[in-house]
Length: 319
Image 1 (tube, rainbow, N blue to C red):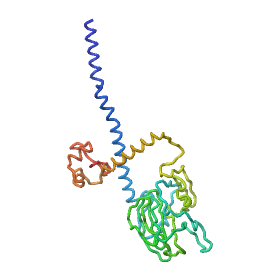
Image 2: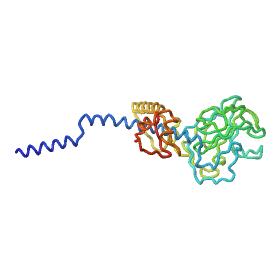
Image 3: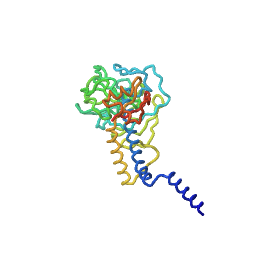
Image 4: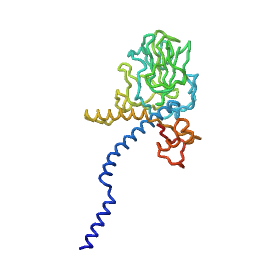
C-alpha cells in the first residue's frame, strides 16, 4: 500500500512537471494572436518594401533594357508566348467616357491607329493608369505632341499623347492616379483629346480590351497576352481593385467590419515598422549607422546574437 502511494505521487509529480501550468497556458494563449498579428504586420511591411523596389525597375524580368528617349524601341525583342497582365489597382486616365476614335485602321489617314482617342477639355487632369515609373517625357511636333510613357510592374507600358502640359519627369515613380499631365491638342492632332495606348514589349494591345471607358472600369482582373492581337480576360472584376476569381468569399457584416478594422490596424502598425533589405557588402554595423540606431538594438530587434551573420536579401527591422 505504501509503495503504491509513493508510485502515485511520483507519477503525479512527473505529470505536473511535464504539463505547462495554467498560468503558462494562459500566457501562450494570449501570446499566440500577438505573434500572428506581428507576422501580419511584418508581411505588410515587407510587401511594401518589395513594391517600392519593383517601381524602381518595373517588369525587369520582361524588358531587356531601360531607355528614356525613344518611345518605340522594342523592334527586335522576342514576344512571350503567353503573359498574364494584372489589371487590378487601376485608375482611369481620364474621367471622360466618350471615345472619339477607336483602335485600328483609319481609311482617312491610310494607316493604323495604334491607340484610342478619348474626348477631353483642355486642362483636364490626365492620370497614371497603374503604379509605375516614367520612362519618356517628350515633345514631338509632328506626332504625339507632349507625350508621357510609363512602364508598369504588370508588364504594360502606357502612352499618353497630345498633352497641353507635362506634370511629371523622367524617372519619377508613380502610384495609380497620380497626375502626369493636362489634356491638350499638341502635335499631330485635330481637337483636344487624350491619345491613349497600351503596349507589351512594344506590341500594341487595343486599349478597349483592357479599359471600359463608358463605365470607367477595366474589363477584367487579368488579361492574358497570347501573341499579336490575341488575348484572354480572366476573373470577375471587383471595382474596389481586389482580387477577383471564380471563387466567392462571403462574410457577415460583423465579420467584414472586424476584418477591415484589423487590416487597417495592421497597416498602421506596418507603417511604423521600418525594414531594411540587406545588400551585398553591408554589415550589421554599417546598417545600424545608416539608420542611426545602436548595434545592440538592431540585434535585439531581429533576434540576432553577437556572432550572427547576415546575408544579401535578408530583411531586418530597425524601428
